Amino acid sequence: MNSKTVTARSVATRAAAALVLLILILLFCTMTGSHPVSLKNALTGAGDTQGHNIDYEIIFGSRLPRVLLAAIVGAALACAGVTLQAILRNPLADPYILGISSGAGLGGALAIMLASFLGSWAGVSVSVFAFVGAFGTVWLVWFIGHFATGRSSATSLLLAGVVINAFFSALIMFLTQIAKSYQLREIWLWLMGSITEKSLVVIGASAAAILLGLVGLFSIAQRLNVLTLGRAEAQGLGVATARTNLIAFALSAFVTSIAVSLSGLIGFVGLIVPHGVRLIFGPDHRQLLPLSAISGAALLAVADTLARTVIAPAQLPVGIITAITGGPFFLILLARYNRKVSWVK
Amino acid sequence: MSLPVEIENVSFAYGPQIVLQDMSFGVQRGQFLAVVGPNGAGKSTLLNLICGLLRPQKGQIRIDGADIHSYSVKALARKVAVVRQEFVPAFDFTVAEVVAMARTPYMSTFGFESESDREIIAQALEMTETSRFESRPIRQLSGGERQRVFIARALAQQSPILLLDEPTSFLDFKHQVGIYDLLKEVQSKTNKTIIAVTHDINLAIQYCDKALLISDKTGHLGDINEVFTREKIEDVFGVTTFEGMVESEKFFLPLGKFAKSNPQNGQARKNL
Image (cartoon, rainbow over all chains, first blue to last red; front, top):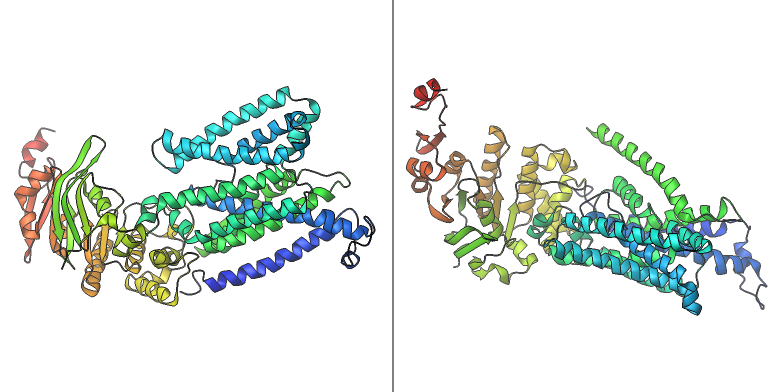
């Protein structure tokens, strides 16, 4: 019996091991790049004058912030994917399914086109607009899903998401038609999802907000387990379904909105990481959520390292890397998993 | 001492369609009650009212003497466990994992099963003879195995009241009596109050202490012999039956127009 279900100890052991692995991967990503660097030299400090220690500048000023940013975005997207798959009871759900992508896209595109009006705010406006667009849109979907149809089923939420996505996508298309060519390129780059250097303050604040959201999700992990059995079953097992759904929805919308405001629309991470972890370690959310957070962080950090090295000194949008590598990786996982099931039988 | 389940003047309607009207009855502690009635009579609605999933528009439902809506969802789950008819798993949870979910109403935030929880889960698997496939995904089980798993989960929930919605539909003879034998064993060993919605009148006669016959939006509670008479069944279900005896208990065989043993059969078949 004991080995058949997860325990606090088994989760802690696996999460700790995964965390060590993640730190090694992040370190490797930091050391990898078009310009070779010496960690030993970097650790001696910044030096007396700006630019005195090149290794320090590259590692602490450029690469490490970027690697950390990729890691927190990856963790957020993976956990939001897990949560939405649970509350929608649909393994095909991803963080963007309820309109976040089009809302963020519309916000981001608007900010890019209005850059000249926004003046000195133009630098942060894309993030702010994207966050507002994303967060606003999911709640619009939530309210349409609940009140337009009169009941809170997963199907009505999904339908509301599809409708809003289609409508906002049309608005984005319209914006790209009237955009100037330099704006168009910027919009496309953003829609594909790309990680760029951000200040340590922005990264720190975002990381804190995302971690808070993830801890919130971990705290309802057992309730998410029960929710996957359906509303009636969950209520019979003592879970207040409406409230838990709302908490899960709000937290995943929050972390996803922060993630897209930092990096644009990076696809596939929120879909394949939950699946991969579930196939290997099982569907128990008390283990699935922490391990997905760690795997998502590692995956996006590696993908972004590829994005900035494969055609160095030029850079690719990381969204292209996740889509190109994510698809086949996912198929391999599925094939392996199906074989395993038939062996057991 | 208060009754485990008390229904008082309860009315319930889905929109304009009234399902139950002014229904009142009580169930004694440790009793095995069968709820029978035609399709659409409101049996499952009644079950959903007793587990708090639906709210009556009128009247009161009391669990252990207190209004059902004075309980939190969590507290109610410690009183009432439900075994439902249909189940569509979204993810591949194993048998052990599904049964372990029964301990959710006893867990705190960030909760994991304690040592005593594990003991309780193991006992429930043991009693329902499901421990031998505890690590199989629930999706891969047969109907009979799956039903036992859900009964195991209800047992691990350690509630004094157990509700079941048609626990033997889709099961063959062996699995039907297997389920009822198990429920009887549970009743005598744990003194649970069991309420089972069923279409199988003959199994109800063999295993249950009382029966509630639902018709005309209300229920008639009585002893098995009193509720199940040929006249009542023909009246409520609108079908001719043959009534026989096995040892001291009755049994009923429904006989349709063209059934071979229908006394009017000869005439009806000729007209075919």
